[in-house]
Length: 191
Image (cartoon, rainbow, N blue to C red; front, side):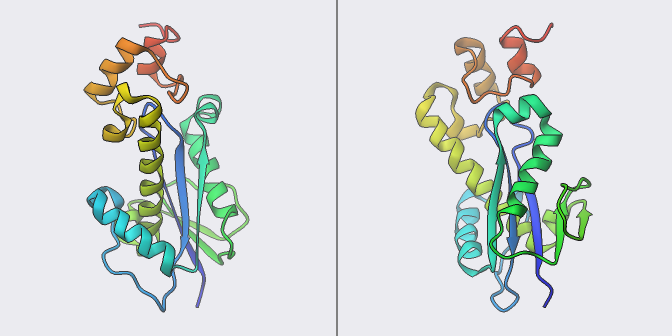
């Protein structure tokens, strides 16, 4: 059996919080029903599947890139860094890696990119679910620190509620200053 790690990220688009990636190596002897792109699942279903993935897989790992890294490197490079960290964090080393999307992180393993892989390949779907549940949980924690922004609801995405709170209260330390809506409010970007 070839040990294949699936890798996916979550959090490229939000105005706040880290970008996260997960790497998962599933156990062929312990299949998990219902794996799908995390965006197509309810939050309750994602949480149930995340627990099943973690308890039945061979290995899993989370990698993230901070808001500061996003602002310094740009979101593309920060995403690849989060993926690299997730892969490097695996307790069992994969023989092959399948990454959702078209860009690959710099790691010393045979890899392939699969556009739409989170919908097509179960091991990438598993990584998608673990990454999403982990990041959403962190955004809920941030909501307790900064309750006026609604992070528990929108997870940092640029919703009307979030943009309104940004305009009224300004940016928090977890806001991405390099993203135009935040930069405009902070006077860092010319309108």
